[in-house]
Image 1 (tube, helix red, strand yellow):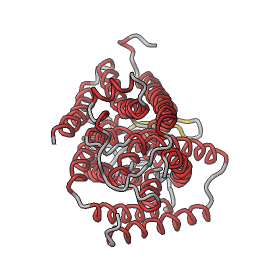
Image 2 (cartoon, helix red, strand yellow):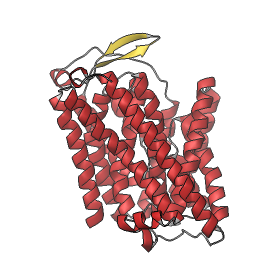
Image 3 (cartoon, helix red, strand yellow):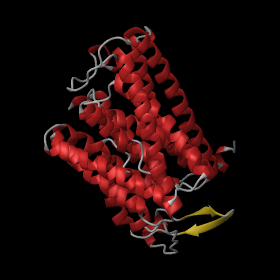
Length: 129
Length: 278
């Protein structure tokens, strides 16, 4: 990779492409593994989603998702994979911001940070509201 | 129905949704939401949550390739993402309060509109216009045409920005990528070359969807038992679709057939929405 002073748009393109591809691959692998655990344990339970009841209680908090994923509970592993998937484009924004800092492009550093702030506000509001 | 049967049916259905979404350029969400709600009677909020997750997977996967090829304009994408993420956040909050009847009808209307847009002739146009605002935001760029780098400008930034607010709102409210609206903003309003518009739209869809997905995720709209088969099926369907597209250019009759199928599905959504069945 180029030294920080010579960081160019093409370097950023490579890194962003790599993050997007890697993020999708890793998160999908986690979702598939979770799916296999889920089906092997609950394959013969009844699936009925005609009324909205939210998600099961044990994965309704980030703490619950983590703890139950490490106890190999299928739905918690799937949820962890989905969280990684959602994080992928957010990580892409973070790396774009870093790239613009290295390019000394102050305007686009600011723009990237504004996009990140909107997503963070959305994250916080989603929990409170 | 047992979990295993439900999963198998949804994976197969989602595969064809992803395939059709990729071939038409409409995206997988457009087919998966009617499939879940009309055929499998899944609550529309769960359907929207699952669709949104699949949108992130397919758009990020496709964007990775385009970004490396240097067609995507990252600056235009980042700048307009201010509008789409703000819109998506608003849409996700609105989705909690808007009755499902209205959501279903709006979904049908946007679906028909997008189907018509997919029939439009795609003329490549390049403007050399560079207003002071465009220059200040460094929005103009170059992109490869037959191995040569061609320079392009951007017009009507304000108009495009407002259209992107709307595109984000629809994405957050309905759980779709709303790629058709994003392309209108960039191609028709801002006069950005079509290839750059579509790839940059794809690049933005993931970030936009993430802004509303963080709300949906915390509110329990994203159920693992539904999102898992949907995201797996749609992603592999979209991958197959992109392989087919490389080998064959979509013919006229094919696009018309898709547009008619999509319009029929959309009418079903509107009817069921008004009848209160969703």
